[in-house]
Length: 105
Picture 1 (tube, rainbow, N blue to C red):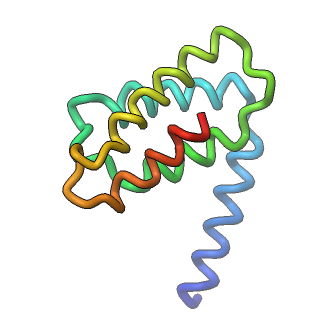
Picture 2 (picture 1 turned 90 degrees about the vertical axis):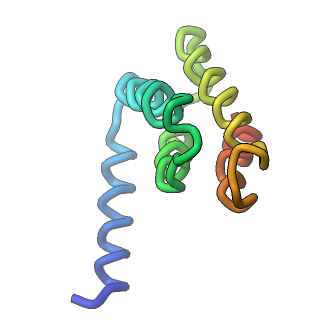
């Protein structure tokens, strides 16, 4: 198996999994990402893959968003805004995905 085929297969599987999630489960995952992956304890070392998963989950959120889920989105938006500030990371390119997610929310 060549590397490009494996990458494409992985991307198709991940896309299928994310599209199959219920809205309740999407928001449970978003809450987990916000509470654990974007917490202040790990803020200086949040990997870019977290931003990719966060973006993928936000892409499947149905609109309009129920009010009880808006608090989760606001919390994630605040954390992404903080992570998107250049002063919190050594390299500005590390903060770019979180800045984009903040703008989208």
